[in-house]
Amino acid sequence: MAGSKHPKTYTRNSVLRNGVNREHSGSFDLHPLRWRILRAQNLVEFALIFPVLVFLMIGVFDLGRAFYALIQISNAAREGVRYGVTIGLKDTTVPPDGIYEINDAGIKNAVKGEIGNFLDADKLVIPPPVCVCREPDPDPDPLNDLCPSPAPSSDCVSEGTLRVFVEYSYTTIFFPSGDFTLVRDMEMMIP
Image (cartoon, rainbow, N blue to C red; front, side):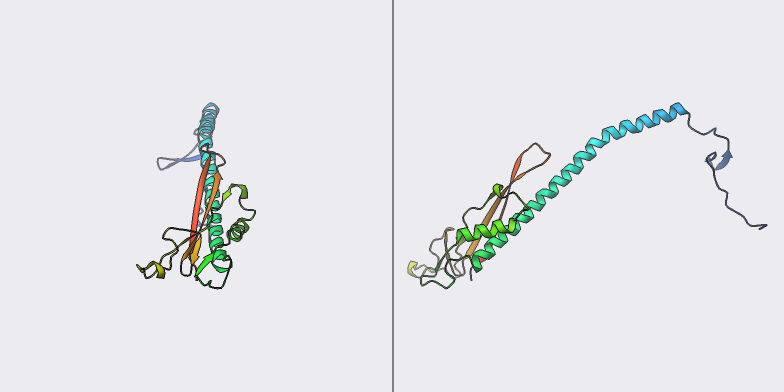
């Protein structure tokens, strides 16, 4: 193949300096002592950076666990309030006085069932659920008042709101600050 131009291949001994291709037999190779110094410098830099990288990786892992626990207790609170407004009321028919009783044990079991084996159930705190009455048309006459009490209570009325709180004591793996309390509450209207 006469006349075909092949690109020049550079070998270990060919070095491009200042735009000029100089081919020498190792004149630009590093001296063995200089090579050892550079290797030692790289090892020292790695030894300084490695603990920081490990600390960051453990922190990201721990933060991921905290978000996972927060999502789990959010789902558990949602399941508890859903159970409370559908089957958690002790009497599913509308009582004559319009006040429902809450099945606390059933709601707590629904919350613990949703947590399952994902989190430590011993660190889970489920305060008694409360009902918040938001009367759509406030009536000054107490005899016609739909709300048994203005403050949150354990008495629920139709179109009131059931609120379930879930608290979880989260323990970090690496950080010495100890436990954090993660709290979630969900509410749903009673039909």
